[in-house]
Length: 268
Image (tube, rainbow, N blue to C red; front, side, top):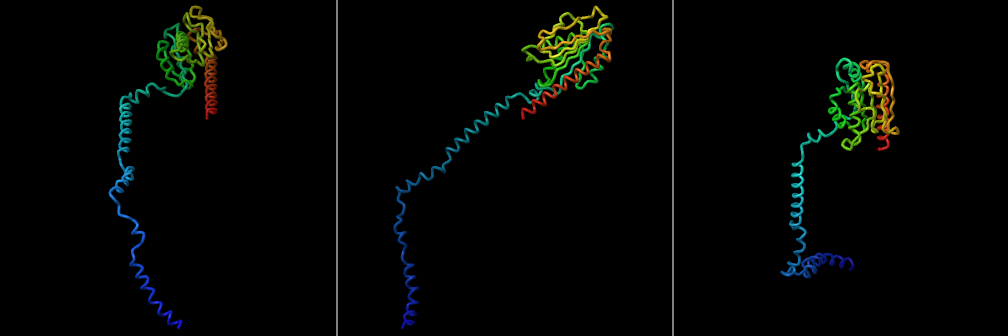
């Protein structure tokens, strides 16, 4: 009997499942169709998809870009900006010769020869004072300025130091000033922006002898006067004088280089 009952109950199961599958889901009956009023309430979901706020933002950005483009177009060419920058990041070492006539200057032999053999040396005439000043102003402030002048060139070198000691030129320092038997009447007083002055004086040419130099501020400027036996036209040709000048220039460049390296080290 048990086996019969089990076999008779097996075919009934599919019919029961089939009948159950025909019945509609209860959950589908409970979901009413959307009404007109309810559809309107769903509109707020579409607001994030609307574009007007984004368009306004793009429009404002475009205005900023257009304004910036106009500002760039109104700028001066890059070439003009580069002209106001220093030519080269190197020390300013300037040699100035005196009046090229027998009895006043030795010509280009002494001063010009030193300029050719000193690193970064540039040779000018005493008449080129304005050109030298322009070159100095285009030399980076961290680089040293060295002026060496003979005869009227020495007078021009002192004049340059005085011109640099002004608001217009930022009270630019002269790290080393070398004067070789300067000719003039107002170059004995050395301005305080000069750190060191070597003054070589010839003792034979009384007419050209400009006398010893004096520092306006002894705490800021060191002046060394040395009387030489050479004549006015030969004092810059003296090997002993040239050696002292070379040594002073080398020491100045070395001190400045070490100072810049120290500043660079602590600024890292």
